[in-house]
Image (cartoon, rainbow, N blue to C red; front, side, top):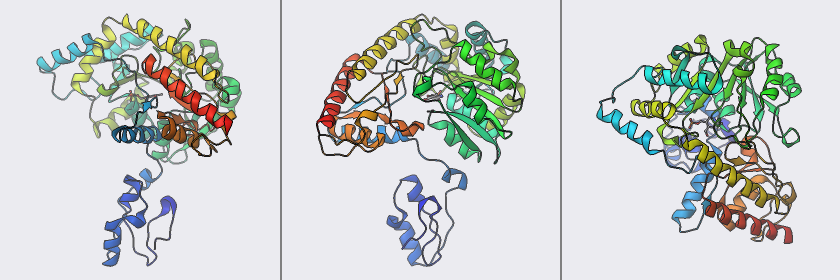
Length: 448
Ligand SMILES: Cc1ncc(COP(=O)(O)O)c(C=O)c1O
């Protein structure tokens, strides 16, 4: 029998070690691992194949839900998945054509680690044009998605004992990358009372002498909350008092801001923070290019240098073809973005209105991105029409998926229990049907 539980599970009762590869990679109980059982029977002890660093993180919960939704679809169930974080639009044709042209021109070989000059120039021009940042191509860096920029920056700079301030609710990958680096994520709560925005007081209270980075994400995944220039200035004043702190400004949803709001980023508002701020962006969300895996940033030279060193030993550089496509995305005709923004704003209004009409659900109106993050406090403790107890937000999401075929993500996956995240990057028909099903499900709970 196995006797050590949780992620410390390692040895059999007789003292032999188990690989428990199955435990980590497939989420199975190691007691059911045939390889381990056979090896143990033979008296063969071998080392865990899982690093301690990997043991500190978990697989993405959003991927787990989407996988379950896919399995249900394969089994013939009618499932509407509003769990993924990607635009439902297709990548525009002029960008696709630029990629085809790049292939035909033979741009199919290794490039610079930091990205081709043409793209870094386009990135510098974008930051100057849209964000009024004074940067040159040499201050810009390109990677395989915005996620790799975050990964590079944190893994290359963090040591055990370092702290990173992560506002809650957070995008799922931030704390896991911090933990992978062996550092500590310090959670600064930005809940519905402050419209899911960090206040200067909460930020100040979360910073210590060990804080190396503060992460800011605006508009936010999962809440859609966005900081105004004034709000950023107030946070910037706090950050100016702590010169040991670097700032990671994740602006990946910059283009999706509604009701005529003007986007602002930290260095634009507080230029004195430029020497310790990484400003992250990418084409995934703005140009419906999630699969092209292309992110970019501007950062001080000492950060670019370490990111480059780390990337030289991982992916080397972003795909050459995606880089040429991104040149077109940044330099080409972007008028379609205003059209997309209007479509998203219309969907946001429809979704917020429909959710607030459901008893037990309360939804703030987000400023941007393509998510809503409503509270289900009024449904907790009830029982669904299918007889499932809704004790937690995860119970709600699972019962809704199984009984009504709508896939959402529970708020606790983003660090805030009692909520769910719905992505409205889906057609109006799908959204209407999903909202109808959520309403029927919630009314079923209310009756039981
Ligand atoms: C807040 C946030 N930052 C960064 C990313 C990374 O995007 P990508 O790696 O596709 O560029 C995502 C993707 O979901 C995100 O939601």
